[in-house]
Length: 222
Image (tube, rainbow, N blue to C red; front, side, top):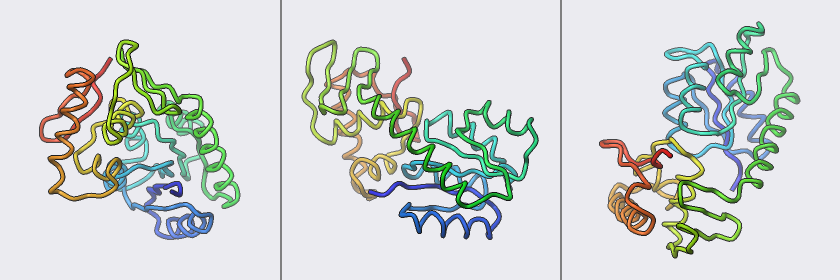
């Protein structure tokens, strides 16, 4: 599957240029014109990277970046006309991965994106063993241990566990989980999510996954 990039940018002309650039390089691209909508789109599906403007309607890019960081380690590159040092400091204080000022070279944007994604792939490769409390998951060996003892999980249970472990703190709706683990969205199958979460708790402990009433599920805090 190609890597998916979310562009949150209120200028239609820049949206169009970036969309053309990235799709021509084989990326899957989703665009949004304001901070609130962009954050909603981010929460609907998985993205490899976010290109984020700062000065936008409704909520600004700094606020969006803070919200993303509370839920995910997805890389964020700020695209903005603000070139003052203070603005850059604010972006990096919110754990943005890079900062590109407008007007920008399309070649530079592409190279920065590729560099950030390459670093993320390398970091992910070095993090194939995920741990949480007394649970250990080896993504390379596709194996799970509880208190040092192997645990047998179904493929769906394993994929759910890996998704939660890779996104500590993020709340997933049932639709999110259906999209990212099952690969489709169908309201009639939401009960399947509940059943698999129940089975994970039974095998790995009831305290593993928190239920966020009226929203969904997240990995319990350490």
